[in-house]
Image (cartoon, helix red, strand yellow):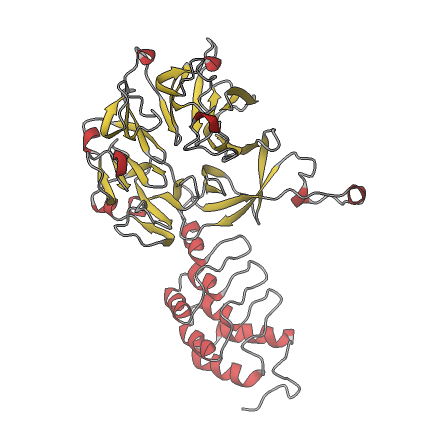
Length: 527
């Protein structure tokens, strides 16, 4: 058949041609479509209509697999996006339920990670296409996914291979175990099940795994010494682990180099869980625990207790007798008031931060108790990183100026995130640099970045946007911009990047150095 349009060339951009091609692909049979595209226009396979749709987009939408195979053989660009949503042919085939077309596209090299204008991959569209009554919650049966460099066997996959995307830790579903909390450290990881059992994996040197030995565990193993207890929370740092039971008792194990275990007769280490017993805690029920490399924090409703190496992060001055270690839990007097009720506490290697029911935030660092903010009400989570310890407290383990600036994040019940940095000393609400609005349900913090989980179960990594210095003459001629509405320092701008293969998440964790990560996802088989 001769070409209908003699003036048509391989660079044809005729809109009428494009509309005719779209109509033919939509209505015709496979043979009719092939014949029409071969004869009608010299550029029929790539022409786009006003919405940026071409023949391969429509073929994928209509489920015409034979036409897709034919177009692929013609060398059509599989990564081409439409103008309306930024969808590729793969997005369209999956959205309209044509799995055979999706498989064909994937077989020919279509990229599963390509994002549309809203940041959704083709798989994200599948996960978004669910009934409105399905809401992911932390109380759901869960599956644990981990990824990272895994050099210390902290991911629980039974090997030392690095994982570049979240992969299921299959030991837990095989045993019918659902995890509710995870803590990742440099040399080990701790997992708390919904039934209150504690599991650990990684390097066991010093007893940090709590198994009664110092062997390395490639996959999570039950801590037998806590099997008869129902545990409610876990915390851990580089060399030790802290566990809180439902009854309000605290157990510690691992290295005790800095007296951070709270053992009355200071031992060099403890490789099985041992209860923290102190006169200061008599008659009191501990409701939370936190840990840094050099110290441990316990708190009750009306007080905060710290122990370990006092490099300024414990909340009180150096001992006048020169004693640099606090062996038994000691109450932070600056946070002991009759009308003060502790709600949340977090610790890093160099700082401790506390939140009260009245919305006051306190930072323990440099031998001081500093008030960071007020009226931070209805908080659901707080985290801190960084801090500078007094190198004179332990010259062998601490270096002068060896820490990092303090960074603090808080999340309230409404899903708003607030940030405080020691470099600017003011609490600011966070604003997202992303194509659409996101509502946060959980987050994690390391020295380099943040991880966020949204109410829709998506995952994001986030980085602070560098502050731009504007010269005086440019300020006079600057034009307001919605993306730069924080020019007067009102907001903290966070650049977000979507995490692949995270679609139904309820919780996230990272180690302090940002080398390994974990996410809890709602088990799809229970929905």
